[in-house]
Amino acid sequence: EAQVTQNPRYLITVTGKKLTVTCSQNMNHEYMSWYRQDPGLGLRQIYYSMNVEVTDKGDVPEGYKVSRKEKRNFPLILESPSPNQTSLYFCASSPPGRVQETQYFGPGTRLLVL
Amino acid sequence: GQQLNQSPQSMFIQEGEDVSMNCTSSSIFNTWLWYKQDPGEGPVLLIALYKAGELTSNGRLTAQFGTTRKDSFLNISASIPSDVGIYFCAGLKNSNYQLIWGAGTKLIIKP
Image 1 (tube, each protein chain N blue to C red):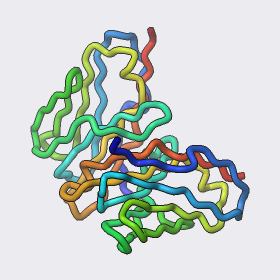
Image 2: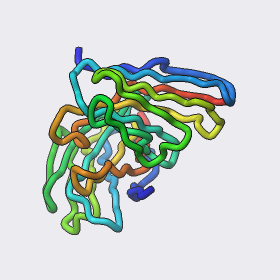
Image 3: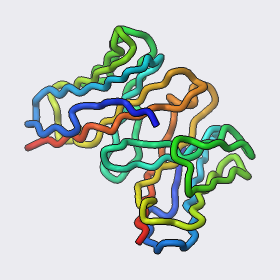
């Protein structure tokens, strides 16, 4: 089954404790991205990657890091999480062509930073 | 960053009613997208619009690309319980830019 998977689905952590949210897709997509969703703000893009070893900042990259060493994986790293990073996070991937219009979203990771 | 103005923020309707929501912007977009997010899941694309004035249907859903290219509308006819969720609009200026998202319209259906 073609899908985007994220782990963990739920995470409670404390301020300053480094964490990684994994994202994997099995569709051989080149484009992958990370979003955060907050009430009243919709989805805001954190980082995106056009291909392996190619990443770029989205609208809200502060406090986040990403890496793209393999085509299928695009982990999101919070080196020192803070309470304002409490949010719902989505990973997405797209096939070549209209990458923005054909995004497949993962199920989401709900993060609470205490 | 820039955001689309999506309204209403939430809708409380009776099953069987028609639903209308819209997105507006001060900027021109070349593509308008409508997504639905079910509880506990990621957004799923419902309808994509590529031309000003375009009217596209997907079952009971109909979306329109505004003629000014600064707005878009989504209508749901004869709502059913599985229509509940959050509906997002998103606009794209061109393929070199990122999607701009609305804040979402939460649809709640009273049985």
